[in-house]
Length: 360
Image (cartoon, rainbow, N blue to C red; front, side, top):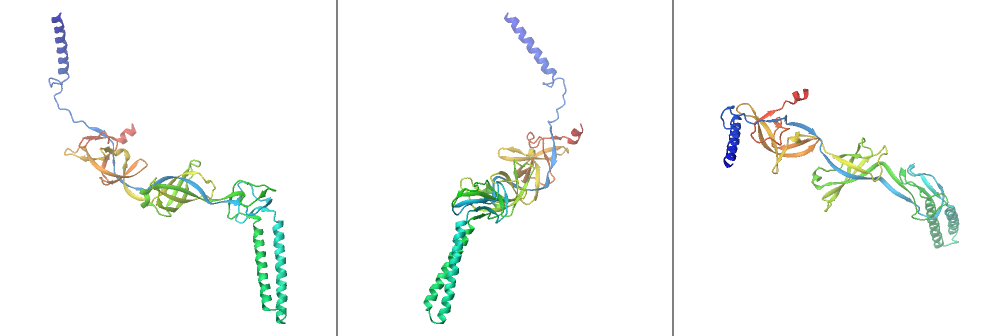
């Protein structure tokens, strides 16, 4: 039995050895020619200088250009209301009129008192020429005239408080009073917002400080109006950096003549930098390796065959699937694009004809 098992093992071993030899692994029979070195199939592209428009992105919240709560300053009954919720009003327009009968009576009484004091002063001036009164009497009466005139001016000024007007042109908020309501100082009549322009407040990391200045153009996008671009300029840069977020606060003024924007909206803000030219390559041509960013440049060997050569590069801004090369390669060099993650330094490569592949 043992001999039988040993014979089986020997036969299997011989069969395997014959298969191994037949496939040429021992150099016996088969193709004795040496194999060609492995060549990776890659696509390439020339590095080119392009015009880029750098942006700094942030999220911001809108506020009105001007905003105020319209309040009463006197105690009185509402006589008439001249606006509705969301009305467009002009500067100086009367929004609410209060019952001013008592105030008018006070003003009229002050006018009558002034007229009487002035009449007595004229009479004293006639008498002083006849030395019937003293100069002191005249001066006292002049003081009474001045006091009466001040009282009249005060009552007339107070009378203005009974006509509540818009301090600037804008859009009213919710009307909070009705005819016949009793209001007192501090009672809110409505709100008023100037929406011809809106402010957007946002922050950017402090590393962008060297790029910031008043007047830089900004573009803003809203989820509510995705196809609309709101344009404006930076109007304020804070003098301090937030010690927690390490960011600087900014404010921009946006044109809103179409009235689409409202206070409190969330906007995506882009600060537009002046255009510049720089060397750009596809992002997929970058091969990160142990903390370095690599690009493989094609060079021709002694046999005039393409060979990939490693270059360490410094990257800049990224935009639309391309990345800026600050240093490491120069304009016009041919770099590996597809296959950059598989290629190695000094490797022979075969350049894929993209045009032919497209035709297929």
